[in-house]
Length: 288
Figure 1 (cartoon, rainbow, N blue to C red):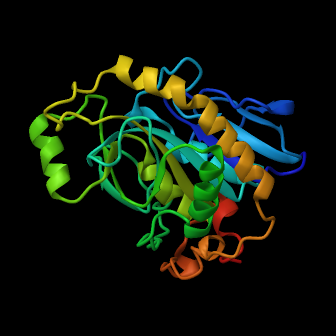
Figure 2: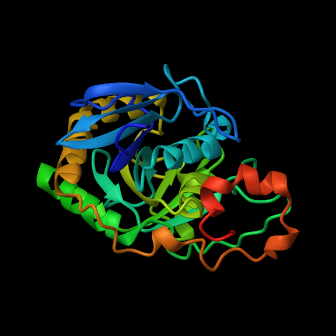
């Protein structure tokens, strides 16, 4: 296998490739959880190996509910990625987080209903800690990288994830605002939780495309509105990634790489052999 990537980028709506990657190779990886959304492109950026994965597939044909989240994260783990930056389109539930702004959220509320949220089960139980679901070190580095672009950005805020693919009703949108949510999207969960189970640092660069449907003086969200704003922000997102890679330390100082250390509760002798084999990539350093 070639040198492992120092960073993986998961591109969402509007970002389907990573500009500036050179010496690229496609990785078509099969995992115990199926195949990822698309072949993973690994290339060189700012002197570092970087992986890129199009979350919704080539041509954006995968609905948020149907994204193979477990296969995506597992495949990036298999490649050796230790950090993931997810690029997400989102709606704003706050007046001050305006369309065109970038946000690095610090909290997550999973309001989805139909997704597989864990790698575990089948005889092995893990209770992963996600009180702070985004890696604080990676988020701080990402905020600094975005700041260098000169874009208007915000650090912090709670990101609620809905099932989709439909947008919210006004009643739902206003309820989420009453709950104290800052942003609304469809894909950061269970992605963040799976990354934590895989002991990969995970952070989100969220692009505010609209005010959802709560804002009485703004038009309700549409696909055209989202794509128009994302097209305007693509260059900023690409530059922020360049900045991040350029300043990224090879050593992690957070606790993400040890997230499973105190999470596995099943007696090792009770774990079925097939489950051990399936999850070996994740658990081998804890279950000998």
